[in-house]
Amino acid sequence: MKVPQTLINSLQNIQGFNESTFIKAHENDASPTSIRINPFKNSDFFNDEAPVIWSDYGKYLASRSDFSQNPLFHAGTFFVQEASSMYLEQVLKNTVDLSQDLKVLDLCAAPGGTSTLIASLLTPDSLLICNDVIQNRSNNLSDNLTKWGTMNTIVTNNDPKDFMRLFGFFDVLVIDAPSSNSGLMRKDPNILKEWSDANVLAWSLKQKKMISDAWSSLKQGGILIYSTSSYSKEENEEMVDWIETTFNAEHLTAKNTDKLGGEIISEGSFRLFPDHVKGEGFFITAFKKKSSEKEVFIRSGKPIKNNNRRTEREIFRNWIKDVDDHTWFEKNGDYFLIKPTHEHAINLIQFNFNLKKVGTKIGKLSNKDLIPDHELAMSIFLSEKTNKVELSTEEANKYLRREDFVLEEVIKGWSLMTFKGFGLGWAKILPNRINNYYPKELRISSKEA
Ligand SMILES: C[S@@+](CC[C@H](N)C(=O)[O-])C[C@H]1O[C@@H](n2cnc3c(N)ncnc32)[C@H](O)[C@@H]1O
Image 1: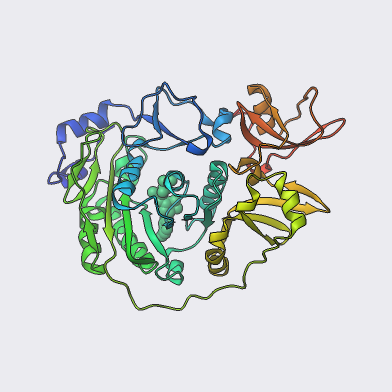
Image 2 (image 1 turned 120 degrees about the horizontal axis):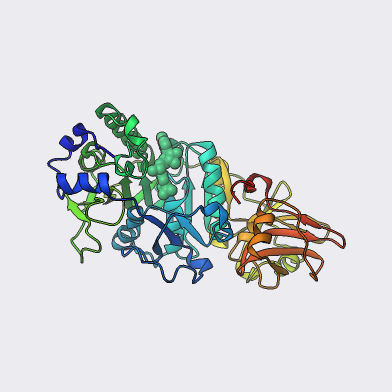
């Protein structure tokens, strides 16, 4: 693929930019395929694959397969993520004390690469809010976090300015901003059709707007991590200057550590170029918030109804691991499992935001029986006591397509359908048939399977 000369010209003064190797990487080298393993659903399926050296859980695959055909993908055992984007792990580890319980906002989160990475590094009592402004992208984000199985996450579909309502709330604000995406053009040559100097400028204005809108939600001393998949200075180094001057923020200048994989430090920020690292173009940097603005009043909702009644607890005990460590609330007949330490935050958020997912939806109660939700099937807190049926590849794909299949000698009632030990979803096994409860909207098509 041919890189536009105007783009090449604009990169000449950037630290680490080497015109000939940059062009060669774009013209001759293929884009690597990488995945990140879910540490909460740890499997040894990718033990032999080469590691992404800046990520504890990243792996390169020898070839790109159709992940929709792999039941382990639907079980949430891994996430497909571009390797350079996984550099967020290093920046988080170097700027944030991850042993503390933190409140983190992932402002531009869909489809979930950053969110699943952050969720993998936080303590269980930390709270991660994953947001995307585009509704269908936020639905996809929610599905991906359901697969990941953690409980300390909330998914919202809001405009960044709505986060002004959460004044000084977050310890960490991650903005993996939408951009002109030139860093991804090797992976997707269509990006070039849209690329122009004018578009770079338009994106930089949008980025400034979203940073300004979300800034007040970061507490004093809190950390902003900003990244793009653009090569352009206007969206990167110039944005750093703008953030420093506009918000009087302290730029946490990147330090030359042990050169994990060929990353470059450009004006105190990390740049990953495809001719230096095994990944695509990526820019990432961090700031500390030095001073706080004038506080605004945050409206809080009515406390969530928290029916910790003994009967419910006894029902949930059969379904949820360590149920005494958790709490739950009920809304419109659905029960949601949350961390007791998150009740106050959820009271604030439920009133002020368009919620797509809160904690783990347990399901509905019908008399003394639970009708379990799909989120519970995917949860890392699902009890080991649940009935399970292990499926072959063929059966698993039939299940994921919501097709009929026959099982021999299984216990009647609700059963978790598993593939290589990992949950895919529920089925209710009746004397003469199996009711497939895999969510219709997630069903894979026959063509895919
Ligand atoms: C680079 S992508 C984020 C990728 C994501 N962090 C991940 O790792 O999977 C940028 C996201 O920003 C969202 N977005 C676009 N305009 C936005 C805006 N004005 N405010 C917040 N998010 C926006 C897009 O919907 C898109 O999902």
